[in-house]
Length: 285
Length: 293
Image 1 (cartoon, each protein chain N blue to C red):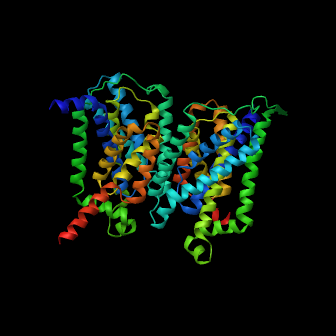
Image 2: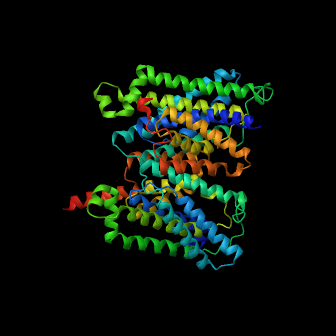
Image 3: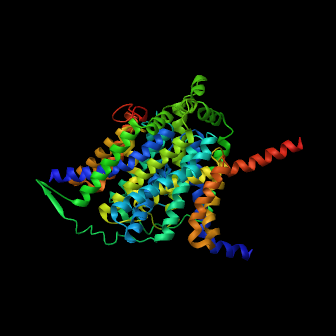
């Protein structure tokens, strides 16, 4: 038991990070599963991080209340964003949402209430490991339950063939709006937890580099299942620590692993596991 | 004052345009967004810096660095895009593999040059004489940069219109399968496209490095996303559109500074981009894509 306690004491920061990253990856996987390459997750995360930090710092709101308010705001922003971008697909959707993210970052950089380029510091670090993993479990369970509903069936039909989906009477616009809002809610949860577990935040924490990172976790893990997103986030958060001994070659290795997975495991790491299970099932039958 | 700002906008716009032309060329031919373009831009600036430090004259260093960037572009395609092309991987996956290559290039540059800002050695850039022309002032370096960017874009547009290679590139952009059936060598044409696009992106990198006499690891990150705004404005895949878009964004940004809105400059740029995508996804000039170059 003491071994575990010692391990936790040494790595608690990384463990918390993994939990937050997994939530962020899940948020993107929701819109990717609806076939939307909407890359505004870092912006939703940032909006919620700032809202919850400002409520905690200026109005002394307790953690849970601040998180709930932040999630409501990011959900609302995501739902509103869905309207102007409703006709955009593929790369065009990706670019528009990247642009939205940059606009949010400029606002964070220039408003007084967000502390400008220096950001906000002394945010109460009250999001404990239990809170973070409790939230992660809640999100994962929620998505799992959701995946067994008719809604999930409609989402996958919209992804595979939008015209067919329209043909059978599915309101594609509503599906897209709900997925984006749900993604915004989960990203907001991740952002609020990020703010409350990292003491200070700056606008650059929520820029395009963060968005790229979240996207990479999702694709490496596998975009077709929530499990893949969590797996990708966890593995790629741990990887830099594991290959620390490579020192200067660490980032090169990071890039090479990324490329190798893309080239040799097209469906992400989760698909490798699934393929093995299917092979095993074939052998048995 | 306003003339000086407009001139600054012209200089800035020329470099944006040169960067964006390569970005949009790859998109026009392959329908992929190459997120390693900015990394190649940075790599070329560092290469020119090293060559100049070894006593090679700047104009030659500029050309060699651009040529090297072109070769990196071909390698990028072989490693990150060609395998995905063979299995029709769609648009999302190539985006990620180009991020992978960008990470590798960035890490290698950091390993070689460290994280500090670098300057061109003994290039005499500070001592460049200023030219006065009526209400405006500019340096010979700025003029050279502007002229080089324009010349490169004119050569590209002539090449696409009048040469056999240009016709192949346009044919592949229009319809890859039909082009292959009609005898266009697909892989060779795509390799040439990557060479040209990356050499132009690299040239832009060297010119930006010279303009501010400063080369840094993250010099590519602002232009990476602004390049997106430029090619959206001009219509994705349109060369002439990217050139026009470059000058428009350059002018918008310098005017924003002139109006005292310099902190909000990027929000204006991306706001314009967002509105164009929402209201007119084909860009300001309609459907003039690479196909009609």
